Length: 107
Image (cartoon, rainbow, N blue to C red):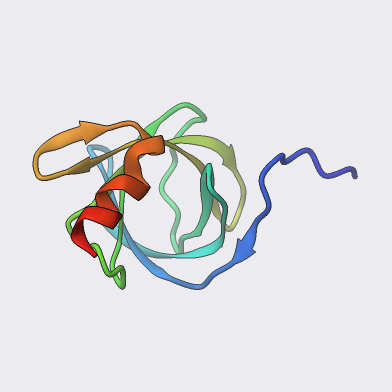
């Protein structure tokens, strides 16, 4: 099977917190991550369709106040493939391309 992804993926085993109205909050771990999305491995995975929106927070991040709004683009037995839609910081929503600017301000 040929690789269809345009972004390089990095294998990362990071704890995350997922939030959705169907299941509340679930702790999970990333499998891989890129600039545009992340795969999360979930035990006892809830049923969600492609297109569902999930809020994601990286629990071990240097920026714990940043939460990402994601959309399910792939569903497997192990978890969900999520694409980053935008992110929230300080009560406001921002486009993904501005994330590096926020990090530079806080550094």
